[in-house]
Length: 310
Ligand code: BGC
Image 1 (tube, rainbow, N blue to C red):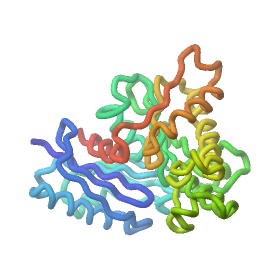
Image 2 (cartoon, rainbow, N blue to C red):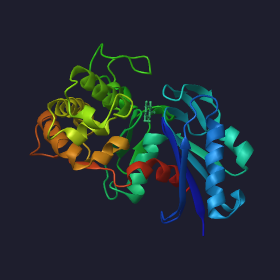
Image 3 (cartoon, rainbow, N blue to C red):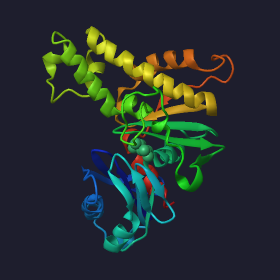
């Protein structure tokens, strides 16, 4: 049985799985992300845990696929630039192959997640689809006519760095007002904490404090608490704006939402679809664009990473 290791580097957690050709999970695990030059070391720690759990040795795997945020030179396996990981020209493939002794492939995390969904999840059977990941950053995987669109040398599809508020908040990429600054899980958490500070009577304070509140908190209280509802509305308006920009250009058959925020399911997608439909060019009578949550959830990137070797 051919086995594939897939590793997804997130801004806070590195997730790994070992799967077979059909996508059956043999084992999975995760470790905290080490930002900066130590990244390869923490991936190796995770790979050792995973290979140990399979009861096999590295040479019995087909290889290791790694999906990482940022511009990836996939031919050479180099992270050319990642603002979130604070890396420039980082030779990840060479560092990993040196230690693991088996083939390593590296790709962009959101492209990987889109491929994972197209092969094993919600994107199956669609010619043109877009997956937007809402995690530490905002990533995009654009599939056109069944093929991933990556731009010149894989540097494209950086949907998180499309500006939705000119002159807005500063992004890790150096520009202001990027989609990511308003719609990442990090942005949602920051807005939640801001809203809690503004309204000390908010129900959000009953269950959480400044350290424990995160992006899930406003969704939990959106029905009963005004401040929580306002955070969700703020978030959904910005998200609908960015997604409608993408839909107006590519008009895909479906938009999938992945990353941590997608765990909100229909609490997110139902109001989001409404806002989005209002912004969709020409309305929804002709070529409507349904928005769905990615079915592989948080595992989409790891699946896609493993699929890099298939
Ligand atoms: C990066 C993308 C990545 C996304 C999600 C963005 O900040 O620029 O390359 O796909 O975060 O991790």
